[in-house]
Image (cartoon, rainbow over all chains, first blue to last red; front, side):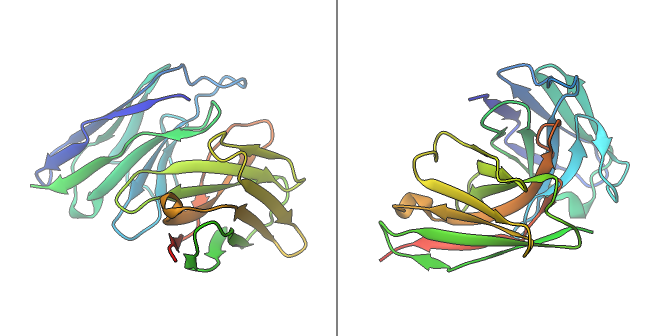
Length: 112
Length: 120
């Protein structure tokens, strides 16, 4: 299985400050069609995951532009330019290229 | 806006079969793959398998010997059966829209989740 390694696993951030989460895969995530199927999800307590970013850097509809994704190959990053209170929760990366699909362990963002 | 809703029992006895249905509204099942995932309490997400509207499936090898996936396009729902369950299968089970043929997994829409406890 492709291992997805996120860091840090815990991320205390002051409101208004930036935050960054790393996701590294054990294999290259480029698919047959040339796209890279690395996505980012946000899960608030008691809720289902919500996709924020798809195929590395594309923001989903309604996602604030303070969220951005970047990376290639096996190394990816989710950045929040200025953390707001609603950003708390757990962030997961997902690789949708290889079988079976696998997620990172999750990064818990909390407000300091 | 596509919406998904899981339904099924919240309690299943050990060694019995867990059965869940995911009903899709606001869009058609046709031409998409539809996934099942799960999340034990306080833990991360695990992909179980997916089914296309034409019945084709892909399954996580961890579940291959125990699961059955089916789809009912006339009623716009798809189903998961997991046999011989144990306490380790206790989790919130999610369904999600996976993607179309020719592309890999996108997982853009998710259900709210169905918490299943395996206990006697």
